[in-house]
Amino acid sequence: MNYDRILIRYGEISTKGRNRNKFIDKLRKSVRIALTTFPSVKIEASRDRMYVLLNGENAKDIIEKLKHVFGIQSFSPAIKVEKELETLKKMALHLVQSQYNEGQTFKVTAKRSDKTFELNTDEINHTLGGYLLQNIAGIKVDVKNPDINVRVEVRKEAIYLSCETIPGAGGLPMGSSGKAMLMLSGGIDSPVAGYLSMKRGLELEAVHFFSPPFTSERAKEKVVDLSKKLAEIGGGSITLHIVPFTEVQQAIREQVPENYTMTSTRRMMLRIADEIRKNREGLAIITGESLGQVASQTLESMYAINEVTNTPILRPLISMDKNDIIKIAEEIDTLTISNRPFEDCCTIFVPSSPKTKPKREKVNQYESYFDFEPLIQEAVQKVETITIKPGREHSQEFKELF
Ligand code: ATP
Ligand code: MG
Image (cartoon, helix red, strand yellow):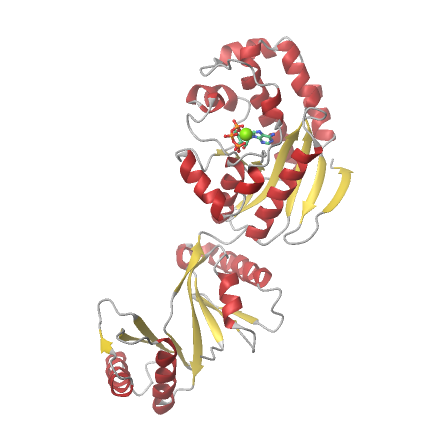
């Protein structure tokens, strides 16, 4: 079938009232980026839908790309037909024949925003339905659960015909919810947390804590590769901030009793991530924490760690089981990267028995004997910032950020 366009339904964004134009604009940009390799396509957006005009480009390839764009509820390859009954019948027949398999059922669903058209919706349903029954051997009507739903939309300028509805990725368009900093380790969880956040329209910048020489260049490479995957999923570049964390970690080891080093490490990470967030004008911090998964993720730990900031901490995985997280990691293709065996800065100084129920008062007391602030500021000063582009080699700018 020679489709000439793809009709995109917005879903959730159409409920967003006054923000609608912004949402549509962001979605249009995402679609444009997803289809950069198809230079002839044209995008037409209106309040309630968007059309990708194919202009001779391959519908199948474009459909594959659109499946991954956040903010699309569903979409349908469609044909524009002139408003003339005989033409409409012929095109509908052609369309259904291209989809039909022996013994399948169908129905016609007409919608009419142009009331001047010669037939009303019931008449369109009956006329087209009868014509298809006559001309396709073995086809039957099923109005409740048809295999093929022939959608006919009579609009002012033309009639649009489609009979396939493909589910979109859902969520909200990239960047429509603002910017947040993703604390990205080399593990399984944080890339999944990043993916789920992007799906809700967040633009991400990643922050990774790196402790040379205790963590190797290969560990850094892993995080670069994970960021690259996230950039591919989001369809835009991702900024990755690599924080030199060795000195802070060593100070913690010298100043804080062993069973509280993990709590203190997390607090320092959060303080640094929050400084970077401020400089980059983000509004939240995202982590891959899941309740009760490890000692640092008990409610008591979160209570002790979270004290250092009142910035919203988003934890998209908080209620998820590890198996479900792994499933998503497989789907988004980050699992094999996360499983590469390189040390993370949090695993090198792991205490033999970290406190699972640390106390705020205690950690505050231990940290009060030493001024961590200069070390934190120094780490922020020495951040290395890399822009990671999807599908291309990342441009490493070994430059100081601030
Ligand atoms: P992950 O699989 O994401 O590493 P995890 O189950 O191993 O998570 P932790 O190591 O306790 O759990 O880390 C909890 C969260 O803290 C991570 O999901 C991540 O958001 C953040 N985090 C941990 N280590 C780092 C790091 N080196 N750099 C940046 N963020 C980190
Ligand atoms: Mg980890």
